[in-house]
Image: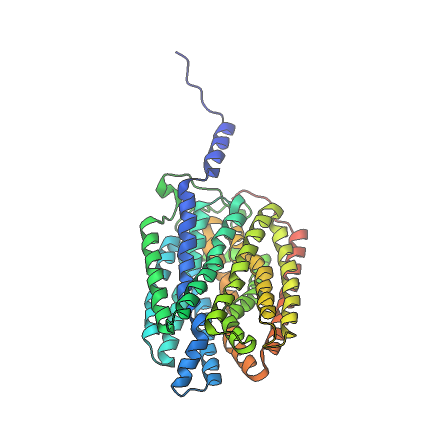
Length: 453
């Protein structure tokens, strides 16, 4: 009888790598659940933007001047965005401590309840409470998604995987806007749109509750490899730990200069994204002269073409590496600045397609690079251990600019017009491009040392 041969260490490593790289049906199902689930968040997030022109008219019928209603609703949007930012700082670390699935599902449930509260409300105090609560609990969604993704997928596919997952807030946003615009075209009022959104998200919550799992090990699959250059690697951290001290998660991130540059990039790009997400339907109605339902439909082009951009940028990022992402950011923000300057020179009520095309171009040029920040870059910085915290801080810092996208943009457009608002946005885009250039330069001359995590 022949003695049993022991596998060599090299063979063990090779077999382990092959098993780890295997993409199974459960990996595909996890991506689908995360994409559909986070897309559903936008039924309860883009709804206020979509119904805003009709809500302003409804408030005018109750004796509130349209300009005053616009400013007050812009204020509510700003307070809600600040609540979202605050929630990001809290939920990111809590998600790393207690798990991504809980965070992802909890955000869904809370958003449903607050959306119903808004629809049942009848004045600004209740509108404010409901929208602030909604945005706060929704902050749990993306960090939960990032945490689950970090546990399921290898770092070598972060760019592509996060590009696909980012479609949830782009194609998902576009799809939700098209559904809501169809409801409005068939005479459904703004309250009906809110009720329909809450019901749709509830159905997606049920599907994720039944099928989504925190880790591949729960499905009998191997754990993937995290980025060996994440900020915890140099301390010899075990990136797969489920329970770690909060200080051990925060300190390596907060002491990283490139991490703070990415946070500054998040400030500029989030200001642009939130401004267009919230105000595009109102801009199309007030300045371009479209009807509310048509404005809602065409506002979906901004996230839709942004989704195409995300796919292109995601594949490029895996091919070009970390430095490539920064260079794509520089190019995208410079081109966005040019489009914003063109929007500032576009006359109102002329050709309805010129502003629509320019708005769509901004989405295509900016949203792909934007998706790197709280997506692949968060996974690069945080690995399995701190990915949700990294995403939460990056997103949270970005949404601090959200106040400007709501209240300030409302006041500027009412007092100085849409042209001046676009000039201010062009300035913000240009400054963001400069920060991206600094990051690219730093990464070029300060490449991190390759050590094992």
